[in-house]
Length: 409
Image (cartoon, rainbow, N blue to C red; front, side):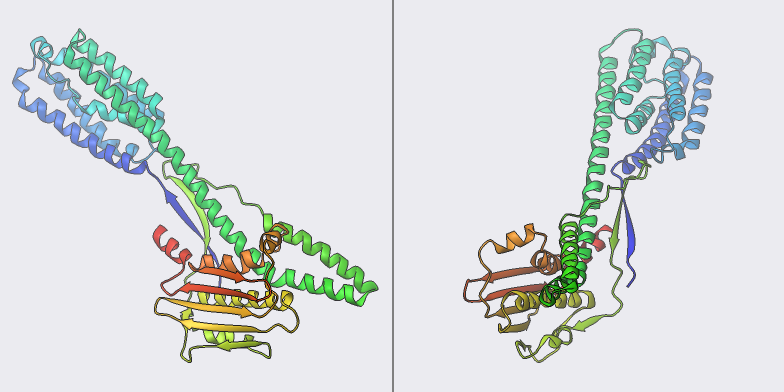
């Protein structure tokens, strides 16, 4: 089956842009409404009418500019802030001095905060500090003196915009960290899958060539030696490997990008696990099965059968030529359990850790790695002189990777 690359986008700031677009429209209507209720009190209402006409056209025409970080350019922000500051200063011309001294609202009113917030979301707390300072100066000039309510509003806008800008910066950094972590996880899973396939095929062949060459001698011994060198080199590569650098989107407006290779939906449907395990039965391998179909998704059944094959291969290689193995298949309501037991000498304490350090990843990748990807577990119990038992558990409700893929779509 063909594998495909799944692209996931994550953006924690996109909802902020949508909220800002709605805020600008609502506060523009609010400012116009305030003016309409106090039209007769203005000294030069025609100045206010002209400003509100420009404000309404600008707000509606520039909605695409606040749709995302990329569209919100520096030129737009400069013009937007200029309109806000101009509206505050035009209050001195349009309104009466009595209303201004009594704390009447400026012409743009709270629409000004939207302009400052655009700076905060676009450039972080430093840009927010610049925009809010410009608005603060304009408000102080409009009032003529640092009156308590004006200072209170100025400080509120200043602190709020800087705080939002800082939160946006932290969110962007966290977004990229998460993207990097997900990319490493996806790359590691893919590397482990390839390592399992290599272990179950190429490494086994190289090991066999090495043993047979040493036994035959002559030119075959040299061939076996070369095969042994390649086996060691390949095991080193498999056990170490390289994780590709995370590919994070340069378009921060659309959020960080994570690319992960995922398995396509399996069209084969459920598979009877017994059909995959019965071929292992032989003179030295006994298989006990429930007598009824043991169904699992095709991919899960194949991976479980491959893990069983790796366990039996370990028996053949390490338990001795005359060792026997027993395979027990159990079909439970929520999981399938396969137990592989042998009567060999057992595994000496610390041998598994030593083998993993040498790049021999049969148990770590071919068995435990496969079961982990299926959302199951592999437990190994070995007593020196009494054989080894490997218990493989796979849930029927779907694999971990399948659940993860469904949750991210």
